[in-house]
Length: 374
Image: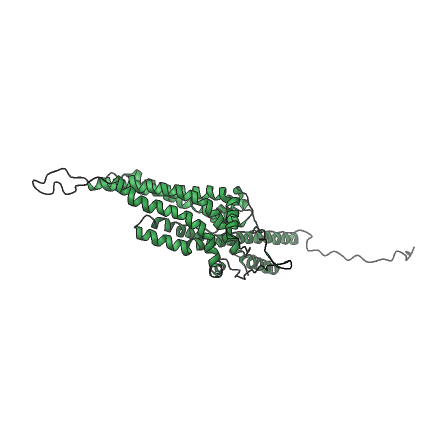
């Protein structure tokens, strides 16, 4: 039984008993909420086996619990999910190469000059020494910052292929069965590429702004000139960044699951975040963690990318789809509960109104053929 069914059953029981719960959830920003059903997908044309008989479409039975269903889908359709993710993984390799090769060769090119950090340590040591702090500051601002911006630009381009992958993951999650992986993948790209491009670009720019303030602060600390402005910039971008980042992340799965306009999807994302902030913020932190790990050593970069390619991308897509379905059903349950509460209050008001409890006298039947006595 899903969350919506449980809420409906509870509200019906409360209505039958004539009472209202003492503690109830306040539905925040309910005026922005647009309920929607899961968009049905066209069935893939099956091939004729023999004598006009077509191949039977087999749909697997998974749990109705949102996140448990996601894990069951991974277990039952892992090979199909991995085939769908292959094209997106190839595009994501470009981001890894930008970071890995950039940090390797671009750093050598920028910091290629011979550094002498031993000058002046002993009497009569010739030459002028280089400042280690200047080299570290140059590394932070002239190496890490450009590489991060280049990786962000490549990451925005990969969002086009992310649309196809999420579309395939949605169909597998709801068992809209298909076998033509490439055709289905690019069907999703054609439908949702521009929506994913806008949302991913906003999310990447938010992360890039947060990373830029960090690199700037590290540069200023290396030079010994870090002031209040550098620290305030980090605090400002992180506070607003963590507040804004969940919005595009919550919009992405709605594009493929529900038939809503871009504006309605944006409003629903805000409603979802305000009504269940803990689960969505937790998902945002988990989603951004691999990005932070990519700016460590090359060994960690390769390990993180392999884990993401094998299971991470698949789990992330199905988790967001399950979270979007749970959020929609939860908000629908709040709407249904408030409607029943209003109906119960109206009935109670009519009952308490003057004359509301008076029973009408039954109208006695009189035979029209029977003559009245004079």
